[in-house]
Image (cartoon, rainbow, N blue to C red; front, side, top):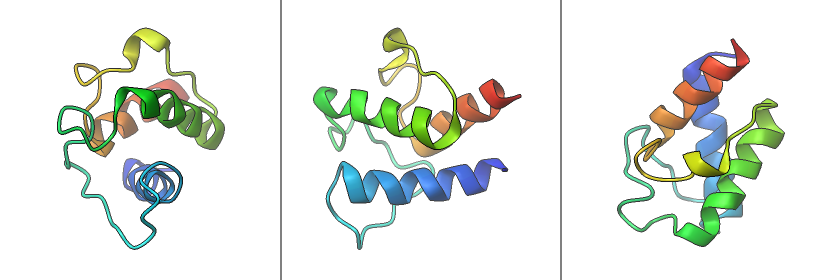
Length: 83
């Protein structure tokens, strides 16, 4: 699975499960955390989604805007971990 597929699947799942807006499409570089679109309570849900969908571990200390703040950055982490 390439990075673009990961971004597409993650974006769809985030819109469905976290944002509760199935009609929305997130851009790969759309700011998620520092914009407040995804709040601190939803970060754990976001990590669980990534872990369940792609079989990678997102550490608690990584759940912040410094590590990833958009789908592209999160997909890079996933691709790197899937190696």
